[in-house]
Amino acid sequence: MRRAFLFFLCLIMPIPWSLRAQDTGSPPTDLPEFLARYEDSLNVLELAYDELAVESLPLRNEWGQPLARRRIDDRRQALEELRKTIRQLRLSPQDLVLSTRLLIQSETLVDDLFDLSQIAYDSNSEELGKRLSGLMRTADHHNGIVESYALSVAEKQQARLRELQEENQSLRQRTGAAPPETGSLPRL
Image (cartoon, rainbow, N blue to C red; front, top):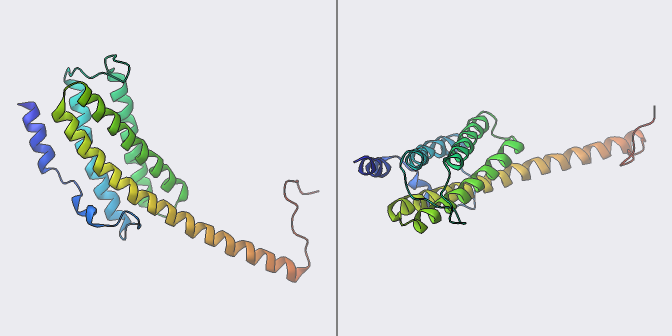
């Protein structure tokens, strides 16, 4: 009964399938909206983690050992950190560090979902494997969008840095100041 309810819930849960029409090679046009949908899509994953922790599924790791609940708890913690990064990036969308952190966390999530889906298939839990594979595809799509966004932020900051360097060089030439020596400390 619980599985049927979770499966039904997964079917009706708002997964951002509309993002599939968006090219993963371009950054999202409305970042706050994308991040809100991305965070909402993680609720389905939380339900899958709940099922893995509560049910006594015969899940095994790549060495044939039973999958410890600790690993699911670690993955839950990583999921919470991902949510935290999403919220922080919503508040500071041009933050390169947050964009990069979100990219790394998204890639880790995709890897975790791949591992879990393979473990589920190897443990003859085909229904769970299919659900995890579907979640992995959605997470991979989000990862592509996050990657293009992070590159966009990096390009903008790199362009701004070049502008500042050129401006600095121009000011030094006008004032006759020598450029600072790289790798050495200024003399006092």
